[in-house]
Every structure is written in structure tokens, then in C-alpha cells.
Length: 640
Image (cartoon, rainbow, N blue to C red; front, side):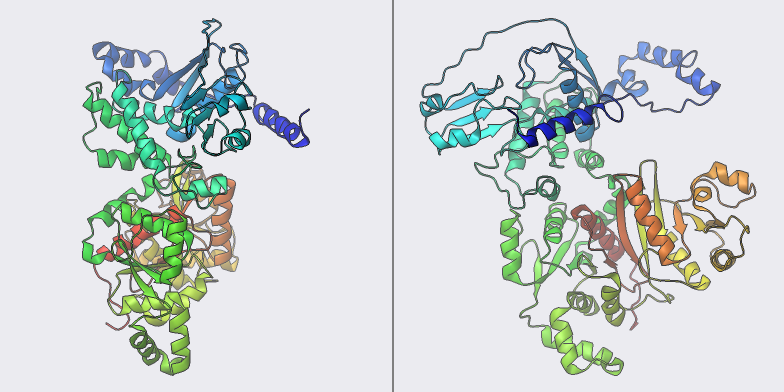
């Protein structure tokens, strides 16, 4: 009899497949079809021109059709998971599942094809003294007495689902030396074709491979094996709730949610296809290709690409970046990526013993003195110089010698700021612990505002399904004046340009171009007048409501003479409530969207204050941005 938990899981699985739309896949058009012209382009007569191009050169099918990103998954339903011969119709949920996995993990479109044709084969089992058992049959067929007869340290791959050929605990009970793998996610060492097929096809399709060669298969195997020996991904740790996986009997194979699979496996397969002579579209720049693959892993990838390019071009002597919360797990995982991608020379603030212990716990490959340097918060030879300098700077602002000593020992953002003040670091990342204003307090004391700036601000970016937008001021100024908002807007526009995006600024309000005389609406009108004088070349208009800002067609209806062309990508909100609420609602309601930042504006040196919810990838992104900032023309500090 199934347990209550099993019954509930069964009902949940059935609901998942039935609601809100039956099945797991759908066809979505990639082109607009809203009028007669669109129809004539998509079908007759326009489609004929695409056909003619393919007749002339069959390789043009990759240009004018979805063929280069489309595969078919085929079954006759005779060997479905551990369900056996259930027939083609009953196998369709499984094949739809494979289609979803291809799309999720590699961005590949799939047609599932179920054929009503049987081709039975006989199964022969030989178990005595066997070193390996590989099963994809039915639950419970491997008995304990069979396991007892196997060779030394047997590898048992019991892949039937949902019930394996033998339960891992049962196998280990009779053979403690056995190494077990199943097809289930809730047991160690899940063997699943999602680990390989999406990425083999991704690499094969991207080079236009005419077939999948043995060399390509071996390249995929080697890439997976290499990845299994590396440290665990933070995304895997979150998805599976396991923090300390490292290569061994309990972790022989990467987890399906490991985001590095597509980059490692697809690139290896593409390279093998080229080397084995089956690629019709060879890739010239593999480094650029690997960076391109990251868009399937990190949705911020395309937006951040200009920043990463800038960061990689910065001279090594300008890449010394201090990470104030050096003991934080997310920071350490991010630093591993930063080191691997040669983005920066990290400086960690923290206790050496704690940092080294956590590096070992998370299976990271960081080596002190080689991959990073440290500021030891318990004992550092620079401590006296730092606190004395801090006291000298703040003696007339209420900081006594004793307070300077205490603060310089316990405030890691203060230590990082002093490193930058002393010229021992080029940039800083902080904020994964505590609040923005607490960190900004110490940054302001030591680093200060850049020349010409009277205010700090925070800009946050969002990568939405069909656009990228930036919002200010999401974290710093509670109720900025029109003059402050104008200054913030100019700084924000400058930062947006670093992303290779021309800023289009909307001054957002509840009012549309004078429909309200409320103070907040008048404030935004005042901001516009100031910007017209201070930044005449900036594309900006307002005040306007949020939908009018994001939809150019609607704006033309409301005010045809608006000076803002196209959809706005930089939204300036009247106060911190409006900005922060808008940011969090957009991030959450639009679903699975990626935030970039917050980016600190107005500081004299490159420094960014993150939030307690920062992800590993978010920290990596901001590290790249701070390196890019450090590589730009030096900005004068408060003392210059």
C-alpha cells in the first residue's frame, strides 16, 4: 500500500501535468503575426523566398528555419524508465518531460514523437563476480544474494524508476563497499540523460554537425567527469539543500541542476565535432562561444557581457578588489569564479582559519597567497596605521582613539575603505551582511563622494523577459530633492552606458504630463527642467506613469510630442518607497527575473554595496563591474 506521502506526491504530480494547461510543452511563435503583412511574410508569398534560398544552399536552413535548434525525441514505449512496455501513448508524458529538460537546460526546442511499433529484445543478466551492474529494467529485480556474489567494490547502477532494481540501503546492507547510483533525484549519484543529451545537441547544433561521432560522445563523458571533480555549484547547493558535496562514493556525477554543465559539455562536444570533421559551421573563437553559452545559465549574461569585456581588458595592477565579507559562503564561491575567469585579484577580509575551513568545506580550490590575499581581522601589521589614520580623519567628528581602534577591528567595510584610501586596493564589494546605510556610513567617512557629486544613490538593473531596465534610487535617499534626483539621473545614465545601452530616461510618477499637481508630480517636472539645462543631450521626458514609460505606443497616444523615443530603460522614481517597491514587485511578479546590483553611484572610488539577498552570480557580476570601474579614468577622491 502506498504511504500517505506517496499518495500526496502522486496527486501533486498529476496536478502538475494537468493544470493549468494539460501537458508540459507548447509551441510559441518567434515572430510577430498581428496583421496582414506579417501573415504574408510568414506564409504565402514571403515563405517562398526562404524556400528558394534553401534550395540554392541547404545550409541556409540554419538561417531561415528553426532546424539548427530543433531535435526530435523518439520512442515506441517499450522501455520507459522503470515502467517497462507501457506503449507509445502512455510514454508521452515522459517524452514531454525530456522536451522540457532540453529547453530548460540547453535552450533546445523539441518535438516528441511516439511510434506505435514494437521491436522487442531479450535481456541477459550475468551477475557472478561482476564488477558493474547496469540496469534500466524494473524495480526489485536485483536481489541481495546476487549483490553478494559481485566482485570487490562493485558499481551498481540501478536506474529503473520510480523503484530501482535494488534500493541503495538494501544493497549497502549486504555490501558496504558497493558504490551505488540510481535514476532518482532523492538518492546520491542520480544518473539522468539530462546530464548529457541537451548539451550534446547544443554543441552539435551550434557547429552544424552532420552526425554525433564517438569522439563527441567521449568528449561529453570527459567533460562531465572533470566537472564532478570540481567544487559544488552554489545553485546545486540551493536546489538540493546540500552544502558540502565533494567527489567520492556519494558524489560521482554532477547534479542535473549544475549550471556549468552546458558550458563544459556543449563546448567540449562542439570542439570534438570540429576536430572529427563533421562540423559544417566551425566556431572560430571558443572563448567567446563559452561566454555565449552562459546566457542559458545566467539570464544576466547578455546584459553583463560588455561589463565582463571591459573587466577582462583592465590591466592586472588595477584589479585588486577587496571583498569585505570574506568569510561569507556566497562570497567565497563567487571568488572561485572570479579567480577562474581571471576577473580580479581578490583581497579577503576575515579570519584566515575560518576562511580556509570554509574553502575546504565547500570543496573550493582557492589557495591563500596564490589566488587571494588577506586582511586578518584578528591580527594584521597594518592595524595601527589604519586606526590612527581613521582617528586623524574623524577626530573632530566624534571618533575617539578607543572608538577608532574598536571600529577598525570589527567593521570590515571600514577596513576595506581604508585599504582603498591607502592605495592597497582598487575597488570594493560589500553589503552581503547588514544594511546599505551602515556600509555607506563607513564608505562616506573614508572614501567620500566623487568630485562634483553631492549625493550617493543606488541603481538596480532588472533583466526581464523582453527588456532590461534600470531603476533609481532603490536603496539610499528616502525623499530626494529635484536637484538631487537630477544629479542621480545623470550619474545613472553614465553607468547605464557602461552596459553598452543608450539610456532612455523616464521620470515616473502617478501623473501623466501635468494631470496632477501633487508635490511628487511637481517634483518630477522640476527634475525635467533641471536636466534640460544640465544634460541637454540626454533622452529624457516626464512626468509619466509606469506603463507610459515602458510602452512607446501608449506614450504617443498620451503625448505625441514626447521627446522620449522608444521604450524607457532607465526609470527615475520620486522617492525610495516608489523605487524599492517597484523594483521588488517587478523582480518577483514578472517571474524568475535577474537583478543586477545595487550599483552605488556618487562614490569617489569604485565600490558597490550589495544586499543580504545577493546571489553568487550577483556578486560575480558586481565584481566585474567594480573592476571595469577601476579600469576607467581615475576619479578624484575627497582628499584630492
